[in-house]
Length: 608
Ligand code: AGP
Image (cartoon, rainbow, N blue to C red):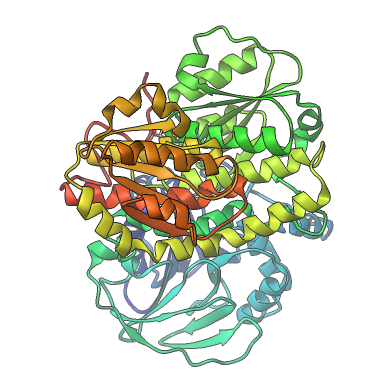
């Protein structure tokens, strides 16, 4: 996600824009820029990296301007560099736009506009929208924006200015938040209130398919289909600090709650329900290698290694391709055996983890095709891979990974569908996967609604110093992930095990002081997990069970039950992990830990 702020008023615009961008930097920070209305037209100044770089670029420059737009970028298309930074302009620089979202049909738009003789300057999808608005411009900026929005597919939050309309700014929203700030003879546009709260508490929140035309002290709200609408003016009561966390106490909690939308973003535009297939732009150039892939190597660390284990279950079960999941830190030194037809996948949120980067380089040295599954566009691993898939989770600020994990698993499900349909996966099974995947976000919402119940369970066990997490099949990696979440933010010792493995030693640990978390949805071989629960009960152990609604057997054995909606077994980790994220979060809070910045940890481990 990116940060947008725009201003139309009588005060110097640049300080307002820069201050607003700083309030939005947590939304994205790989480049930034401003577009100002100056007497000569539209002046655009951009810089790669953090906003401080933009400030240095602007240092000492004076502009006579009280209308402008600004943007801090989280790249989704095109690496983070000066050229791809927003604002984007049309070919002659009359119009400037800042955009937050993903234009899914931007390849079509580029082809269409290219045929009209329009040459593109950047690698971004957002420029396609700028050029399209300019293409339709015949004197009315509002009308040109409306026409352009009527043919794009995807999500947007935009602010647009034009040389011929020095006191006007047009905004619109579909899927990416946009708020209108109402001041004394001045108006604002922003991605969220944090950017403008220093100037006004009177705001209007645009809804999807709505737009606003701001001109010299007044504004009009409309639908993008040109119907005038009245929107309620709301009073912001929050303080600035809480707003940057979207009203949540911590970024980690905010990111846990973002998962319905980030999971949707991970599969958006990639599922072909009619044929039960998938399409992934970043894999197009390697599709024949994927068709011929005879062994799949996952290289990852930490939480990403857990999502890789889930990918192993998915691909081996549905695509029948052998998969090996490797700790990147081990793989890189093991002189691995790589054959033709082997494909190495580096799975990494940051795209900068040094062990994963080194492992990918080693696989490439040995002749493997190297693909990336990354969150950060233009990261080192993304750039050095031979192709790959972005998970579109937006910046993950909390050190403990949550939304990136579920987005990685979602993308792995999409890849499983893509590859599986080359082989044994039937159209019907493919359609089932598509339908079940599309239903996941709503089911995650239902689980998030159980937060208070999970917090109560956390209170019961917050003093325990050791936990055991047990799961079977595709939920064994979820047990590992739940244990890691608890470890890294609450500093409580926790181990994840395959449930059947407990009897080979760990059961010696079981007593009333060792809570055991069972991850046991229906399906797969989870029916056997009841026997493991009986073994724990027989030794006085306390059981927290994550089960499907209506599972009376598991519920009868557990001391505390978290009942979640059901889905197909191979997608169940997307649901079973949510209660474990919340349980870890609440226990950490109860133990007074710094959830967003746990001791000894860094968000990206770029050192050995
Ligand atoms: C997860 O909560 C941890 N922060 C850590 O294990 C992390 O998953 C690991 O360092 C890998 O990071 P990456 O996904 O950015 O490569």
